[in-house]
Length: 174
Image (tube, rainbow, N blue to C red):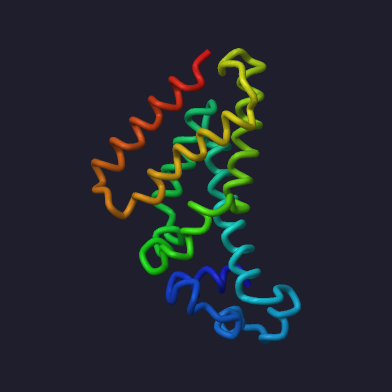
């Protein structure tokens, strides 16, 4: 179902992604989708959690250290096809998660980052401070680069990532 939802969002965007279309693409009945997800927004939340949670897991697995994990996450998000499509077709869908509230993915990113920070603090690699507060500040700093990706050329994206890396490294250095 989530694969079908992903394909539907990539083709039509979130607002035009219906449970009927997702069911058709998944080769199941609409009622089967409704048994699992009460409505399209719930299905979209599950899809975003899966997609962006995988980005966090990949970055953590591929990275050695907090800064590398953060930059890996941001870089993957900047290239993520689903996020790119959302920002292209429906940036207003993303707006509440940027200005009104912290979404599930952001909470997950902060939690993962706080865990990375705690482990790095224990090893003496990151300065002292509340890991939750440090993680929240870093997540906020990363948001701007991620949402600005469409307005940046490839060289500007690379430069932005390098500068973000320097900023986070300096911020966390003991």
